[in-house]
Image (cartoon, rainbow, N blue to C red; front, side):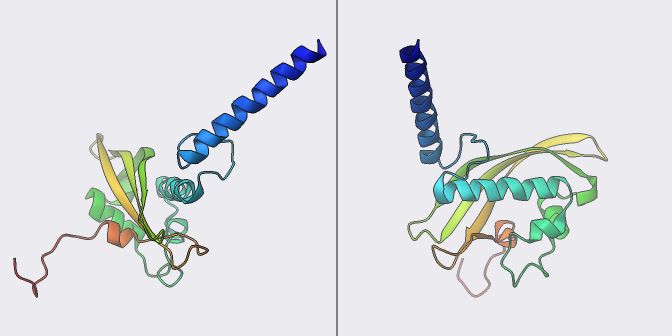
Length: 164
């Protein structure tokens, strides 16, 4: 009986370790009960999901806190959301959000996170899906990642000083 219990316990430990290893190698794509694994990709995934949760609950001050400290006071999250969805943020209900892809550049200091949102325009009752790319930077490997939402939503105006 002791041997069977030990075999089962060892099997469970190996399975749990294997699962956590796969979750880490996937960049945190697999759910882990509060364990901060997945390296930088896992951290970016968690930041992005937390950001959209703050937007979902209209906590724009908290959503601005993912930006660099010098921009947090000046970033206008409601304005940027209105540019993205062409609807006032009060009339927008974010139903679902997920991280589709995390991409970190070769220097390890720039990243982009593709997210998929399902939103409902409350006035018209229209449901739409939108993909939004979030851009992140950090100065050094030990620094925290900070978002650049205004870069993510930048309009594609032509540069007048360049030939087209």
